[in-house]
Amino acid sequence: MAEKVMRALQYEGYGGGATGLKIPFTRIEVFDGEMASLQAARSAQLEVMDEKREAMAMKTKSYQMRAAKAYDKIVQHRTFKEGDLVLRIAIHVKNGTKHVVVSIPSPKKDEVLVIVEAASLNPIDWKIQKGMLRPVMPRKFPYIPVTDVAGEVVEIGSGIKLFKAGDRVVSRLNSVTGGGLAEFAVAPESLTVTRPPEVSAAEGAGLPVAGLTAHQALTKSAGIKLDGSDQPTNILITAASGGVGHYAVQLAKLGNMYITATCGARNIDFVTSLGADEVLDYKTIDGAALRSPSGRKYDFVTHCATGISWSTFEPNLSENGKVIDITPSPSGMLTFALKKLTFSKKQLVPLILTPKGENLEYLVGLVKEGKLMTVVDSKHPLSKAEEAWAKSIDGHATGKIIVELTKTMLEFA
Ligand SMILES: NC(=O)c1ccc[n+]([C@@H]2O[C@H](COP(=O)([O-])OP(=O)(O)OC[C@H]3O[C@@H](n4cnc5c(N)ncnc54)[C@H](OP(=O)(O)O)[C@@H]3O)[C@@H](O)[C@H]2O)c1
Image 1 (cartoon, rainbow, N blue to C red):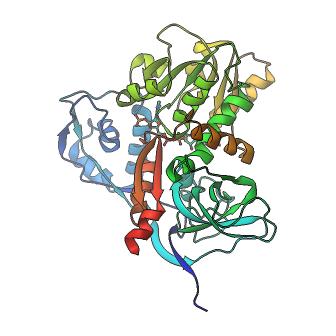
Image 2: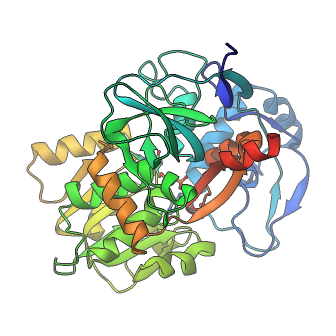
Image 3: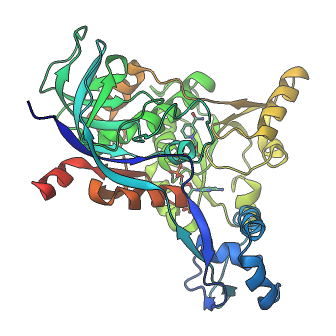
């Protein structure tokens, strides 16, 4: 019997991301008040350098590391305006992914085999590739990344009770084994839920990691009820235009919160349309300081951005204000421990997602009822999934980045 195979995108070792810097010398202008590109932001910090020395330094790894650090420092504090002169450094992105044809996996006892119609990317996917979760993930290479999929069940494991072939579903795949950027994937029954006809594959695929994280931050960590029965309290949501943030704003609105949100200037109208009551451009002074335009102090913060220190949050918190940090850094962990040990009323609480099928079902239900939407940043066919991958690494998505699999299959049919 012929072996059953599928197309997939996989990588074969740690690495990925920006691996080289090129074309250092051209001066360019930044137009329309737009924040300069990642490349320009990195190089702006280095304008003072003599070009010849820079040419030498450019070739060294230490230069690249310094450039990356410089970018991290300035990107949140500098707004580029029309006419600004910056140096251009092109980033050579070599993300290490590769298109392959491999065997279709077989479902274990408690798994279903899904023909994937859409998969959504999360920053954790490329962070795993970079080795940030080493040695836990991936356990072995080659590795097909991505955990969030929607599709149709084609085969079930021997112990499956809830699903049959032909059921449309949304699944969060096993994060250790991944497998989402492929035409077929095996999904645990416990993290697979029915997808009603009103919920498209892309809408469903956006939900697992990003939606569940927003849900967990608001309900389990902050204790907010999403039926609107709570008295309004003040919540700040950082990076409200991103995958997690855009769900968090909508859910917080269902919970009757007064929402202050941060995002880039281009997304202010978008985040307002999701339900935010006031929106700060994170590249302005007030935005970087997280100061509420109406002078509110935050009872909760759902922190989805990176690089914001406790000293920035602290003066903006109410007496018992709590920062739910979904991007915990080593200094954040230290603050968490210190605040706990000193019985501080203001707290920083790190969050790591514990996905639950019942919560995924709840979110899919909200999408069905039109109370929650998945905003799609961009859709990419599997044949161009590496572009989606590079976009996620770039960190400027508005909503969710989707890889559409059905389309790919039709293309190849
Ligand atoms: N702890 C957990 O279990 C868990 C779960 C899920 C996600 N996460 C982490 O949470 C973070 C957010 O995830 P995501 O999926 O929402 O990422 P994402 O979709 O890639 O976020 C991109 C968005 O963030 C905005 N942004 C970036 N820096 C910002 C800042 N300083 N202030 C305001 N907005 C900013 C960007 O706006 P511009 O384009 O305008 O810059 C862009 O719209 C990631 O680091 C992810 O790894 C953790």
